[in-house]
Image 1 (cartoon, one colour):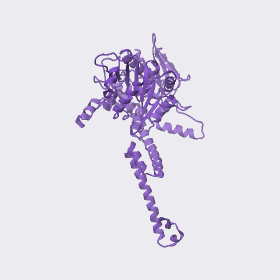
Image 2 (tube, helix red, strand yellow; image 1 turned 30 degrees about the horizontal axis):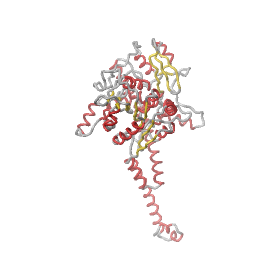
Image 3 (tube, helix red, strand yellow; image 1 turned 60 degrees about the vertical axis):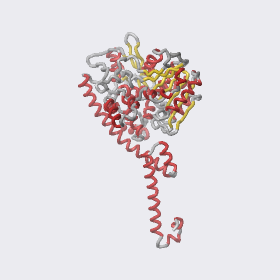
Image 4 (cartoon, one colour; image 1 turned 90 degrees about the vertical axis):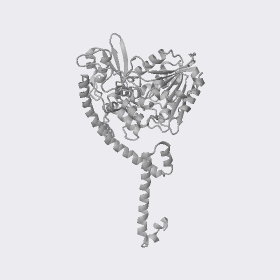
Length: 528
C-alpha cells in the first residue's frame, strides 16, 4: 500500500488501515532516530573534510537536530566536568602549598588566593607602585632607578568558577540589577595580587623572613641541561647563514607559537628553503623565553615587554640585524606585530600563521573576552578542552606540567621505543620543554593581556608601515577560528589572507612545509 493511501478516508475505514498506519509511524520514527544516530557518530568520530563529506548525504532537518543535540549535550557535560575540576583545583591548591613549603621552605602564594591591597604591597618595601590601566594592571618596580614596567593581565587572578559564572548569568537575565563577578579591590580601585608582589620582590632583590625569592629551578620543574641553559641572559637561537661567509642582503626571523620551540620551524620550513634564498639571507629561529632551550626564570612574569626585549637582545642586537622579514605562528604573531611596531623601517614583510586576534566588542573587558574565546570551558573539541584546562586552572595545569614536562625525557624515550625510532619527536620536544610558570604567565599576559594592544599594533602597521602582510589559516583550525585572520584583514586592508582547506592549527605548517617555503620565498622576493 502506498503511503499516500494511508491517510485517505476510505483506507482509514478499512480494517487493515490501523496496523499499516501504526507501522508507518514506527518506520518514520526509527528512520529519524537512525539518521540522528548516524549524525552523532559522524560528529564524534570524524573531523575536518571527512565530516563535511559525511554531512553531504544528510538532510537539513538532520543536520539541525545534530547541531542542537550536540550543543546541548556538550554544554551539559562540560558544566559537570568543569564543576568537578573547580573542586579539584581547590584541593590541588592545598597540596601544592604544603609541598612548596616542605621542599622550598616558604609558603608560595597563588593566584587563586585573595589579592592584597596596593597600600600593603607598597608599605612592605616602599619599592612597588601599582596603577590600573584598562583591563590590565601595570606594575612599576622602583629601586634607585626604574627597573621594569610590567603589564599584568587580570585573567591571572580573575577566573570565576563555573558556578559563579552560572549565578552571574542567571542574575543578569532576571529582573534584578545587573551584577558582575569582580576581584576584591582597594577603595582607590587599585589591586595587586600577592603572587605578583612576591615575584617582583625576588626580582629586585627584596627579601625578608617571610618572602624568599623563587629558586632558579623549582622542585616541580625539569633539571636537565636542555631545560636549564648555562647562558641565562640570551635566548637559544638557531642560525643558518651562507657557508662561504658572504654578506647577506637581509634576514628572516621565525617565531614559534605557544608551548612550542624553534624546532617547529627548523624541522619543517627551514630545510625546504632553496639554496638561492639562503645565499642572500640569514635565517633565525628562536626559542622564546621559558620554552625549548631558552632560559626559564622562575621569577619572571613573561610579559610582552620581556619577550620582545629578549628577542632584541638575542637576535637583533647580537647579530646586527638591520633589515628582516618575520614569520610567526599563533602566539608568535603577537610578538611579531610588537617587533614590527618597534622597528617599522627594518621590517620588510610580516607573515602571520593562525594569529590569535579576537576583536573585542564594545563594552566588553578585553582580557576576559579573549579568555572566554580561547578557552570556552567545553569538553569538545578536545583541543578546546586542553586550552580550557591550561587557561582556567593554575594548579591543575601545574600537575599536568609535572607529569609531562618534569619527566619529558622519559616520555620521549618511551615514544621513540614505541615507534621503533621511526618518528621524529621535534613537536614533543617543544611541547614538553617548558615550565609551568612560563606557560601560565605567557598564556595570560601575552594572549589574554594583549587584547587591547593588538588593535593598536595593527593600526600602526596599517597606517605607518609599508611592509607586506600575509596571513595563513587552516580552515579546520578548531583552536583559533579562521575569523581571526579575516579580522586582521579588516584591520589591515592590504593584508592577503590565504585559507588552506583540510589544515588545522598545526598542519597549516607541518605537512605542507615545502609549499609554505616556496610561498615564503615569493613574499621575500617581492620586497627585494
